[in-house]
Amino acid sequence: MAGDQLSEVFDLVEVRGVLSGGFAALGPWVSRADIGDPLKFVAMVRGRARLRTDGVGPVELDAGDVAILNDRSWLEVAGGHGAGPRREIVPDQQLAGVLDAAHEAHDVVLGGRIELDPAGRALLSEALPPVAHVRAAASAHLRASLHRLFEEAAGQRAGSAFAIRQYGQLLLLDVLRAHVEQSVLPPGWLKLLTDERLRPALTAMHAHPGRTWGLVELAGAAAMSRTSFAERFRAVAGVPPLTYLNRWRMLLAQRALRGGDVRVGELADRLGYGSESAFSTAFKRAVGESPLRYRHRVRSGAAPDGGLRSGG
Image (cartoon, rainbow, N blue to C red; front, side):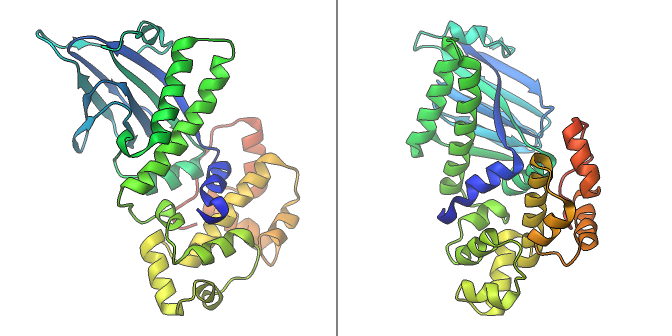
């Protein structure tokens, strides 16, 4: 992706892949759980299994596959071979069961969650279907990331907690890359990042977010007519170009307020607003609170009220 806008988005929304548990099983097995996280992932390290969740038909997971569950309330994963009833398995949050999975005959499953700030949760949930099934057969990078994550989880070597966090990040990145390559994406930012026709205009907005962009200028960057550009952008992104630009500016504003002591007036000028009050009004409409209140809340660790609003 020109300009590596996917990395920009990852940085802005503070996305993290967090490994939360797993198990190794021999013989018929089934694992069931309620889902309390908006975005959860299930990774099939070894073996095969069938995943079920509310509102979605069965998903067949092969070795190396990863499924991201988007706003689902429960899941069931069943696998294994042999006679007899399926053994009910509860994933081990400490991964002690995975440590015994040296034998190649074991099925091995890892589970985790995708942690984001509210703005990132809104962006990613819009970009993913209820279940995003990413097949390892089409992605050598995904298989490699998954096995590195498993080796760290199973090895429990010095520094493994840090390594698991890093590999969890890389696994999530590889899952999204493979999802882009393997799937027909719904309208949203992820689809927008992959659109070759719109890329010059998107790159221009990302490089100069404070510029006073108009439809004619953005259409010219994409070598399209104003009407064709506006129609294509809305079909791909799900929102008009200037709405996308305003959302991008709000993400940049939130990062600046989280990580520095920039004055609100300076930030307003940097992002192309005519005055501090105009910026504050736009920020409150998009985020639900004033810039100063947002800065105070995130630095104090208080729970967020919400992310970017759909109309922001």
